[in-house]
Each structure stands twice: as C-alpha cells, then as structure tokens.
Length: 110
Image (cartoon, rainbow, N blue to C red; front, side, top):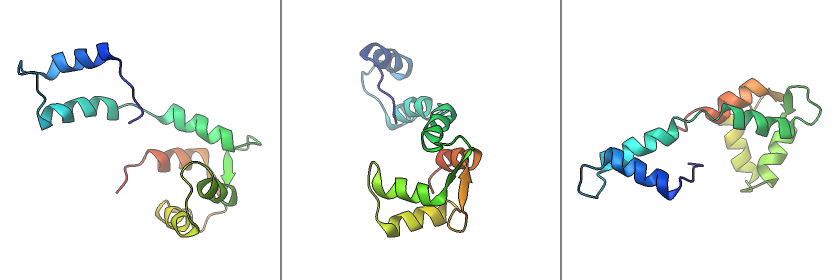
C-alpha cells in the first residue's frame, strides 16, 4: 500500500483495535487497512506526471505513455499495453492531460 509504519505506529494501531486478546480479527485488519487506503495520492501522481511531461505542456503524448508502460518498471507486452489503454479510455486519444492521468491513476481497479 506504499506505507511503512514504524514499530511504534504499529503498536499504537494495535492498541486502538485490539480487544485485549493480542490477536486481530479480519474486521480489525479491515479497519487498519482503511486508514492507509484513505490517503490522498493526488500530489504523488501529479509529481509522477511532471516527470514524463518533459516540455511542461500539461499533457503526455499517448505514444510516449505507451513507451513508458512497455519499457519502464514492470514491463508490459504490447497486448497488455493495448488492454490498459482501452480500459483507461485512451486507445483513440493522441495525448492524456494531467487531470485525466490523475483520474485514471486514482480510480479503483475493477
């Protein structure tokens, strides 16, 4: 989830949800995860977008986005890239704006 709580933070979380048994129920785990999932990642996604918006025009060419997906990090096949582009509604577009990119990146995975 992109979080790395300290031992102290984990003890504090446990104290809040533990009924005294020293064990967590599934519902307790859900409560704890809900805290982490509620973080707003907009600023982080905006910064990531800026890295690829080299000329600062507020958009990324779809060809460049396809290249990024296919070649950086967890590399994707052309079929996988096509599927992502279609699911994100970008298959017929020539570029993606910063706002569109943020919306896509922060939308729940179906």
